[in-house]
Length: 134
Image 1 (cartoon, rainbow, N blue to C red):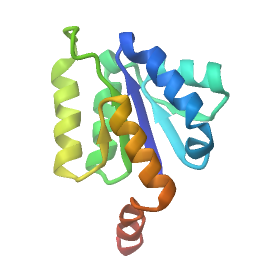
Image 2: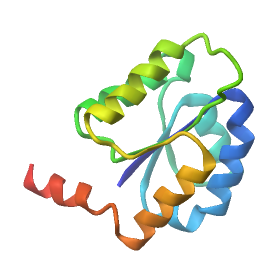
Image 3: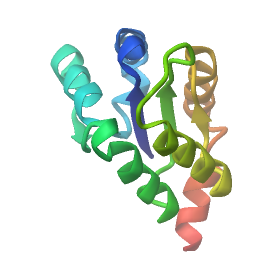
Image 4: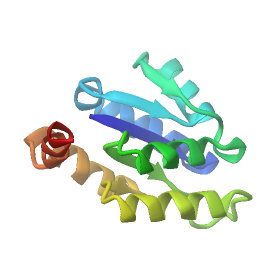
């Protein structure tokens, strides 16, 4: 499965801790991330990650385009709800696209853990079945 990893600046450390804790699961999938977040994941975990632009420079929109083309299977986006983001319309659009195309989306660590455990147990395999039908 292709999984997007995104984090606002004040949540990047949390995402790195999360990725480190779940490396055994994440290493079995194709990972991609917005620029700064992805570079940190690569530097701190050595996992292979495809890099998009930084979020404010269009990375969120690039991931949204993949969602719309059915080329993204899951999005993990650690958002900072307490800080205004200059690219908030892009964030809102990405979340909306995940809802439109029924892409599993986690915006906090608790939900992300549930998604990865579900992925590990095979509960999210319907996405793979849909891909085979396309």
